Structure formats: C-alpha cells, structure tokens
Amino acid sequence: MNTTDIIRPKTLNDFIGQQDIAMEVKIALHSAKSRNDAFPHTIFSGAPGLGKTSLAEIIASEMNVPFFPVLGASIRDEEGLRNILSQLPADGYDMQTGQVIVPGKVRYAIIFIDEIHRMKKSLTELLHTALEDFKLSMKIKNPLTGRTQSGLYWMLKFTLIGATNYLGVLPRPFVDRFMIQSCFEPYTEAEIIRIAYHSAKKLKLDITPEAITELASKSRGVPRILNRFLLRARDVAIYAGVTQITLQIVQEMFQIQNIDELGLTKLDRRVLEYLAAVIRPIGIGAISQAVGEDSNTIENLVEPWLVRLRLMVKTQQGRQITELGLQHLGQSNPFQQSIIKL
Ligand code: ADP
Image 1 (tube, protein in one colour):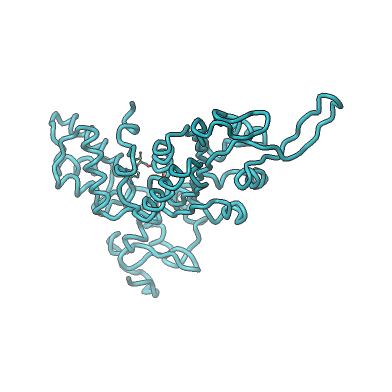
Image 2: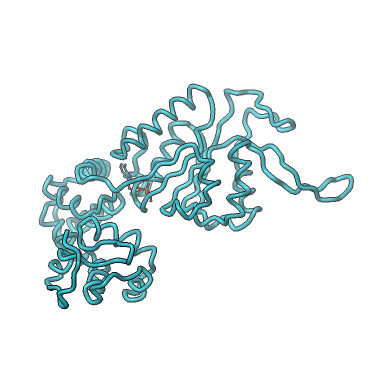
C-alpha cells in the first residue's frame, strides 16, 4: 500500500469533519442498505484536497460494491461513456430481460467521475435517462436488416458520484438529477489537528503536539496540504537524523519550502505583491498573466487562503489587496487610495 492509501480514511468513523455531509451520507447509506438498493446519485463540490474522493470511496466500501473512478476529461465521446458503463457487474440480473432475478446477488456499483464539470454537455445529456430510469440511448445494428437503429435500452442500475469545484459550470438539468448535492468547506483548525494526529498515527510517526499545531496552522484547512507537510517534515527529521518530529523540525521544513509565518507560499506572495503594485481591483485573468500561473490554480489554491487571512478581498470589480495584505508585505498604501480595511 502506498503512503496516500495508508493515510486515506477508510470508514465513515475515520472521516473527520464535514459533519453535515457525513450525516447525510450516513442516513442515505443506512436507507440504501436496508432497502437493498443503490446509493443515491451524489454530487460533491468543493476545492481540491477536501476529501471528496475519500468519501466516495468510503461509500463504495460501506455499500460493499465495486468502485470505478474516472476523470471527467478522459470521457471523450459516447463510446467512451458506454465503455465505462459496460464495466458494471451484472450479477443477479437476467441479461435477456434486464430483470433482477437474484436480489441478494446484485451489487449496485459506484462510478466516480472526478472533475465532472470537464465532461462535454452532450455527454451529460446522454446520462439523463441513465440516471433517472437506468436506460441508455444506443445505436444498435439489426442483424436481419443490417440497418442501424437507435433506441432507449435498459442498463444495469448503478450510482454516479461526481466531484467538482465548478458546480455552476454544470448544466442545471444534469445537476438536478443528483439526489444528494453537498458542498465541502475548508476544515477548521481543530479538525485539521485531529486529521494530523490520525495521519501521524497511521504513518507511525513520533510527533510533538506543538509540531502538529504548527503544521495545522499553515495547512489552509485542506487535509491534502496537511498530509503533504507532514510527509515533508518526516523527511527533514530523517535527514537531520532524529526520530521525533518537533516544532523545530517543522519550522525548518517550512523554511526550506519557502513558506512564511502566515503560511504563504512563493506563489501566494507573488499574487499579493502584484495586487499591491496595482492597488486597484483587478480581474483574475490579469493576475494569472502577471504571475505566470493558470487562473484555476490561483482561484482554487491561492485566493481562498489570502481571503481567509483577510489579505485580499474579492469584489464585483475584481480582486483587491487589503490594508492587512499591505502590512504583511511591509508596505503602506502608496497612493493613499481608499482600500479595504477589514
Ligand atoms: P479531493 O477528492 O476533494 O481532492 P481527497 O479525498 O483526495 O480530496 O483527499 C485528499 C487527502 O486528504 C486524502 O488522501 C486523505 O488522506 C485526506 N483527507 C481528506 N479528507 C479527510 C477527512 N475528512 N478526514 C481525514 N483525512 C482526510
């Protein structure tokens, strides 16, 4: 098992935080299992690294059904989509009629589409009947006439779980077909600390409480970032020839990674410095060009943290640095222009 697999939560009890979502999942799991039915179609939205894939895997494991993960962008055409659906297990079905004949044998598999917003609209439309009635529009060649006919044909029942950070980009009629729609939020510092203890235990690391607190304070409420820092701190400890991860080891790791006392990376500082240089509100495209990084990365990884620390604000006019942001860079407002004090 690789390190990512070791750390990843395996059961709902292991899954820390996101209480509302976990409760909704718990209830739906209980209901689906009692009725011997499929888990409802679900869409998880929220920034990368917040646990969407982990929770989808937990659902599959709690339901004891196969899990087929796929990236939205990799489903190029109708054939690609049908290939994915053709992997579904047919146990318990009469393949001639599509009727369930041995209910105890049926396993309603989970197809997990990560970055589902990257699927073409025409493909999401093809899924409408699959999600609602478990029927799929197909072109089938008639062996007698040799002609190709299209029609709606039955398919195996399944669960679709989609994950995205761009829920608004998905067509509304598609989103409406997901019974559960949950939005993941960044974790509180207390939750991140609990996750850190969990990960450290699974990796059998000796780490002090001060070191954990320091790691958590700079993890942006994102478990994936926390786990990355934890592994880097382990490397620094090994390099230093010590067995315990102490506050000093963590601080050294942050210094090596060029992460400052507020947890800002080089990229965060470049964005902030650019905002300080222009001072007025500015669009994401201009920031992206100026710092040479794609706008998705800036929107998903940089901005949430800068906003949470109140170093910048997002207004209708664009992104703007705050007084706190200027102070962090050790600058004052050069034009005495009215900027936002938070
Ligand atoms: P996403 O799919 O939202 O990008 P992942 O499910 O891949 O995020 O989570 C990234 C990593 O963070 C996982 O490998 C897991 O170790 C950890 N993680 C995420 N959420 C939690 C949680 N609620 N409790 C414990 N660990 C978590």
